[in-house]
Length: 280
Image (cartoon, rainbow, N blue to C red; front, top):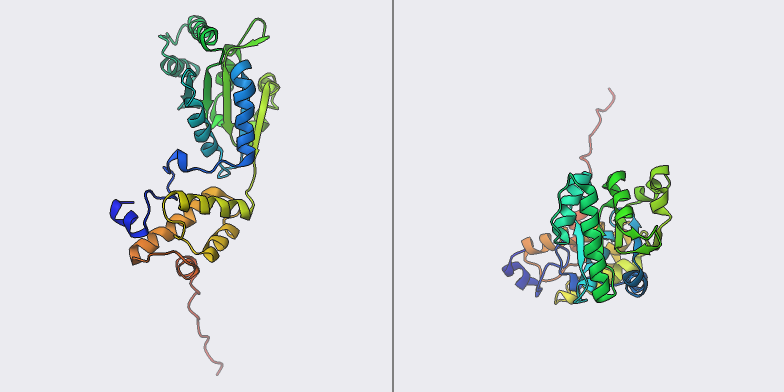
C-alpha cells in the first residue's frame, strides 16, 4: 500500500500485510511464557524447543517475535535455516554460512567438528548456547533433522551445545512418532502448541494492530466483532479478510471500515431466478 493510501487512513503501515513490522505484533501470554522458558533454560543448557500448530495459527509470527527478542542479546549468535527441505550437503553449506564457519559439504565429519568447535568457543565466552531457528520443519528430511540432533550434543549426549527451535504444522508431531525420529522427539524440552484462536483473541489482535499502525478507529467495533467471529479462529484468514476490506475502502476512498462495507464486499449474489413455463 502506497503512502497516499496510508495517509487516507492515517496509518504508518498496512496492519494486515504479512510484512507488518515485528515490533507491532502482539505477544500473547502463552507465547511470552514459552519465550521465558527458552531464555531461562535453553539458552544456558541447550536442547530442542518446538512450536507446532495448524496453518494460520501464528507459528511463523511467533518465530519472528522470538528472533527479535533473541537478537537483542548482544553476545548471542542467532541463525535460521531458509531451506528446510534441503539435502544434507546443502544443509551443511547453509550452516557454514549462518555461523561463519568455512565448510566442505562432502566432508561431514570435518564440518561437524568445525561447527562444534565454534559453538563451544561461543559458550565458553558468553555462557549461552547459539540458537538455530527452523521454520516449516515438517518439510525437513529425516536425515537433516537427525543431523541437528547429532551436531547439538557432545559428551555422549550429556551436554548440549546448541539451542534449536523447530516450528511446523501437526505433521511434525506425527513424524516424531516414527522410528527414525523417536530419539529426536524425546529430546523436545519446551513446547508451544498453537490452536484455533478464540474470537476474543482475534479481536484483541485486530485492535492491537490498527492501534499500533496509528488509527485505532480504522474499524468500527461492530466490524471487529463480525470479522473475529467469521475468521474460523485463524489469524491468517482474519488478516486476509481485513486486507480485502482495506483495499475496497481505499478504492472507494472511505475513511473508515464498517459492517456495511463488509456485507457489500463479501455478500454472495443470489443466482438469477429462472421462470418456469406455464402448463398449457
